[in-house]
Length: 490
Image 1 (cartoon, rainbow, N blue to C red):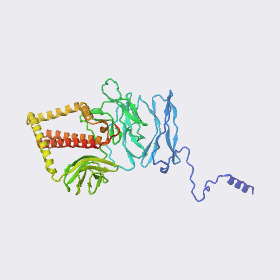
Image 2: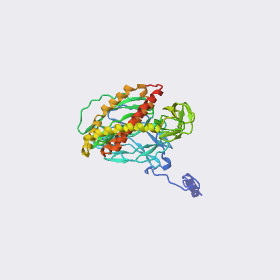
Image 3: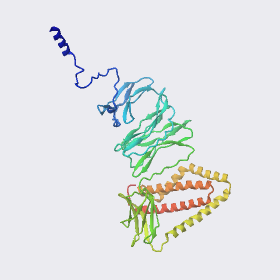
Image 4: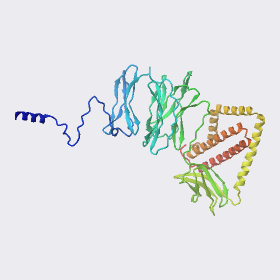
C-alpha cells in the first residue's frame, strides 16, 4: 500500500505534458538556441509607414541610430532611435524593409567599414532599363545600384501602393568629400509649388581637373523653397551633366531631376502637354454644311463643341481632332471647346456662302512655296553640288545654334515679354500654346536638317511651307487667347 501511495504521489506531481491537450499530438517547445523563423503569415505585406521625425542633435564620440518601424503581433510598432558608441573605421548602415515576393523582410542595421575602406569613390553605373505596365493605385519605384562588399549591385525596381497626398522621390548617390553617399528614396508631400522657384544663388568655385560642378538648386520642402548647395561630381567619359529644373505642368511646378546625358548628343527638350489643348481650326469661314476640323491634343470623349454659347451636337471627337458640320441657319460667331469644367476658346467663324476654303488654303501655300524656292535656290548656289560643303555648312549652322542657345533663348524671352502682357503669359492656356509652338518648330527644324543633308529640294520646300503655316497658326492662336483672356494672377 505504501509503495502504491508513493507512486500515485509521484505521478500527481509530474506535469502531464502529453495529455495537456487531449486529442492533439505532443510538440516539444523550441530550443532557446534555435533562431526564431516567422511563418509567411507573420510577415507584413504592406510597407512600413513613413519614419517619424526625431531630433537628435550632436554628441561627440557617439552615432545616432535612427528610430524605425518593427513588425510585432501583426502590426507596425515604432522603436525610438538611440545613441551608439562610435567605432573607429566603421559607419552605421540603418536597417530597412525589403520586399521579397509578396511580403516584406527586415534587413537589420549593422556596422560596416567606414569612409576609409568601403564607401564608393566612383559613381554608380547607368541605371538599367526596366519595362513595366501601369497599375492603377500603384507607383513604380525604379531600380537602383547599391554598394555592397566593395562593388555595385543592382536592386530591381518594385511596385509600391500609392499614398494619398504623397509622391515618391527616388534615391540618389551624392559625392561628399571624395566619396559617394546614398540618399534613400522617400515619400514626400505632394503639395507641389504653385510659384516658380526663386532665382538661383551665386556660387563661387574653382575648377577641378576631372570634376564637374553640379550647381545648387531650390527644392520644395514642407511648403517652402529650400536652397540645396552645389557639389562636385566625378567627370564621366563622353557624358555631360544636365542640371535639374522645375517645369510648370498645369497650375503647379514639378521637378525634373538632373542627369548625365551623352555629351555628343544635342540636348533634346521634352514637351509634355497633358491637358486638352486647341491648336488650330480650318476653315475660318464657310457656308452651312461645310465641314470644320479643330486640331489639338488630348481631347476626350466628353469633349463638346460650343457655337455662340450653345452646345453643338453631332461632333466627332478623336484624341487630336474634332470634326463637325456647320448647322443650317447658323450665324457668324465664336467657336469654343468644352472639356469637363474647362472652356477653351477656338476662334471666330464667319458664315459666308461664297467662300472657297480649299482655294484659299492652296493660295496661301503657293505663296509660301514660291518664297521658299527662292530662298533655297540662293543658298544652294553657294554650295553647288558639293555634298561635303553642304554637310560642313549645315554642321556649322548646328554648332552655331548650339553655342548661341542661351543667347537666343534670352532674346526670344525678351521678344515674347515685349509683345504680350505678363499676366497673359502666365495663363495656363498661353503656356500650353507657347509649348506647342516650340515643339512644332523644333520638329520642323530637325526635318529641315535631314532634307538639307540629303539634298531633297522638294522636301525642303514642303517643310518651309509648313513652317510658314505654323507661324500663321501660332499668331492667330495667340490673338484668340488674348481676346478671351479675362485676367488672373501674373
